[in-house]
Each structure stands twice: as structure tokens, then as C-alpha cells.
Length: 325
Ligand code: NDP
Image (tube, rainbow, N blue to C red; front, side, top):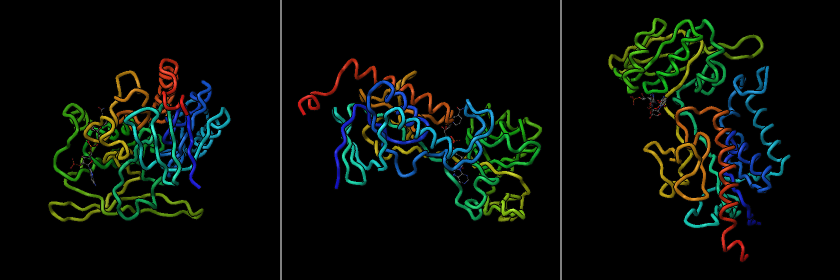
């Protein structure tokens, strides 16, 4: 049977931004309710070793980190619900969201932390070697490729930034782009072309990722099958790792026409704040951030959103219709 939940702070999404917002809101006695979404834990649940989340001297596992965040949020008083929000009315307070379960969630404030997803190529072998040589985050995984040869796919600012970042570890970085010019900013391109460790393969697409499996059953990527789209020439490039940097898609479909977004669909928030254009609605983490995209920056924004929601409720109280109910 469907239920109706009322809360002062409705948190949508369960990555580091959502859980951190939940922890702060719960500790402010706001009794938050967090709707976890279809993939609780978000992008970190598909990574392995995490070495850049502060507080852990030894590498930790992404899925474990997210379980800990969930447990911490619950221990301090967050109610978590396994559901997926499929509709939301932000036209007036309280805000009303519908879950695919049929449940209704009524929030005096809303914190949107639905995240973003890295785009993948969708080629043969990609799923098999994801986490075993194929990655969509150089900042997260670059460190594991010391003195090795890695490839980066893409021609935008992310690809160029990731390629340059990877030169800090790798012995060689090959950027593979499907056209004969990059779309990254000129200054970044100049730095890329000037770097002695970087080589660019133009007009080429990856058709397949190939690799081996050792005696313990552990897979590792060994190469990429390429096709030159102009000459149709096929080749194989031996690499130890490949970083896909062809863009991200923020999970903002639900908010189209309701909140301001940039042309790529990221929610626009006020500077130095997580406030959206609707008072009482906040956006935190990758759903609003296409530059940093780190667990720790998302967590920081989750904290900001909860503090801002708390301040908003202190100033405005609960809505008239909630008082009457
Ligand atoms: P972009 O959309 O800018 O670039 C994506 C790149 O991937 C393009 O070169 C595109 O090729 C290529 N691509 C897309 N799909 C495929 C595919 N299926 N196969 C092969 N190649 C593909 O994404 P970014 O993540 O680089 O950047 C997103 C936004 O964030 C941009 O506005 C960017 O400027 C910004 N950004 C800013 C940074 C900064 O200011 N420091 C850092 C990182 C990002 P093609 O060019 O042919 O379309």
C-alpha cells in the first residue's frame, strides 16, 4: 500500500552529497528523509580502491565507503527509503514528490543530490575491463598507472585535463580523438601538444577493448582495437589502462522546466551556495558540478545544502498548509 511521508528536509539521491546532507540535517534535528534512488551509493559503488577520500590512511573500497556513509546518516537519525522519485512539484511549498513505488514525499525543503553518470563508449570489452584497466576518472585511478602506458578517449576539456594529469604518473599518454581537432580550450591544447609524454591519435575510434585473465581469474586490459574513421585502417594499440573522458550526463530529467540548468543539463545554483532559483530547494554534488566531480567536493556541497536548509527553515518555518495539517 502506498504511503505519504512528511519531512522538513527531503533529500533525493544517495551519493556523498546526499549522505553528507543527511548527516548534517539529522544532527540539526531536522529529521531528514532520504530517497535513495535506483543505484544507492551512486558512482562510488562502481569504483574499487579509493585513496583520495580524507580520513583513511590505507585504500578503501568505494562501495564500503558508501555503506559507511549510509550507516552514519541512519545512526544520527535519517530515515532512508528505497524508492525512485519520478515526479516532483516545486511550484509551491511544501514540495511534493512521487516515488515509483506509489509513495508520496512531502518536503518543506528539498536537497537534490541525484548526481551524474560518466558516459561510456559502449564497445565490446568495456564492461569486462571496467575497473580492471578501463576507468572514467583519472583523478581516482591515475595513480595506479605509474610508469605505464595509458590512453585517454575524447577531445574536450576533461580529456585534455585528464591526459595532462596522467602524465604525472604514466610513462606515456596517448589521447585518441574521433576527429582531427580538439574542442578543448586552446590554452589546454597548447599544453597538451607541448608535453613530451603525450601523443595524439586523430580521427580514430575504439572498436574493442582487449586483455588477459591471470591464473587467479583477475582480468587486465592490454590493448585497444582502433579504427581510423577517415582511412578505415584498423590497428591495435598496446596500453595498460584507458580513461574514457567523453562527458557526463547529470541526472536532472526530473527537474527540466522547473529549475534553471545550463545547456548540458547541470542545475544552476547561486555562487558560494547550493541555492537554486526556488527558495528552499538546494542542489549539491555532481548534479550541479561539472568541474570538480569528486566525492569530497560533493560531500562538502551536501554539508552546505543542509546548513542552508536549516537556516531557511529557521527563518521561514514550515509552510502554512503544513501548519494547518
Ligand atoms: P565535452 O562534451 O566538452 O567533450 C566530450 C568529448 O568527447 C568531445 O571531444 C567529443 O567529441 C568526445 N566524444 C563524445 N562522445 C564520444 C564517443 N561516443 N566516442 C568518442 N568520442 C566521443 O565533455 P567534457 O567532459 O570534456 O566537458 C564537459 C563540460 O565541462 C564542458 O563545458 C567543459 O568545458 C567543462 N569542463 C571544464 C573544465 C575546466 O574549466 N577546467 C574541466 C573539464 C570540463 P567531438 O569533439 O567530436 O564532439
